[in-house]
Image 1 (cartoon, helix red, strand yellow):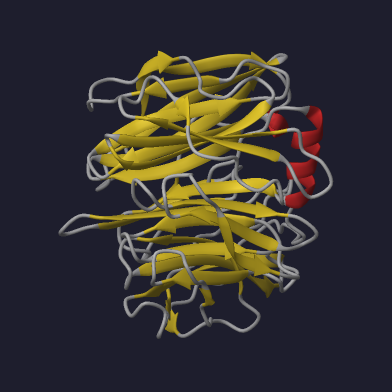
Image 2 (tube, rainbow, N blue to C red):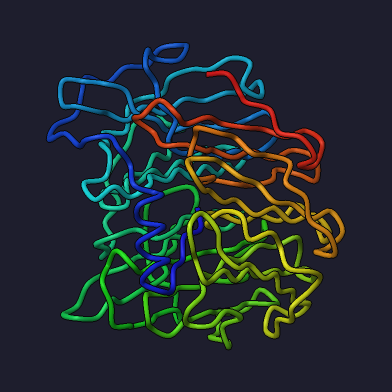
Length: 372
């Protein structure tokens, strides 16, 4: 879920585009564990560990206004089961919720957040408990074989401090990751962050805020993260994506206009030095997400005019095409690939009945809606 912004116009545009239209309640609704999809379920975030196994966090109407549910599939979306409700409501500030799933041989761990409140389940969704980290806003979630990572944004006076936290993926024991911290002037709503991982660990972390320095940290060989020169300038949004340790990408977007902005793809073979590659991606759409399937296949999620847009390159950035143009939905979020052929995304505004999950089974050449 990668959301970084640079200019005031970019911050305002993304804030408007990514705003949720659902309202928050004060108390939780009655928990329920039952097969199937609840009535009026509106998907809001999704996470998949394989082409067949995935989870969807969404909201349903309840006495308190709107309450979160989490669904689980082991059949690629052909059937669903409702897990224990995580006790979350939509963000009070319209932030997009997030969901992260990870598995070991014995344990399935889920982390869900509306960015203000965060909960974790180490029982595969049978029970949930609060995550206690010093965050006024959660920026991004990511999981590896050694743990779950979370970026935390906290306000200190007129500064926003960003830190990186980790817990083992079998329990909730959060600790700060040494060496990753940034303090920038700005408002909490304009500070965003991104975590890019390979299965064995974190490789890139970035953060940014309106009219403030962009920061990035790298661990190219799996060692401790160290700050590097950020590939994107202070007036650009910054997204990271990894195919493997030798194919690390950054997407820099800037100059937002009416449903469009400049985009440029950068590539690194060492995780430290990034160089522009290929031709410029299409300007169409305000960038909202970014994902990499392999060293040649890269996807950009965007939106403009309430349309979900995916631009893709299948030759390492030399040429671009737009395989998804989903009208009357909204921003593309949770864009990810489970392998070279299978990917998933969510596009739309939860609560307005426009959100749709799309999947691809041919490496991003075509995207089909997933029935819920």
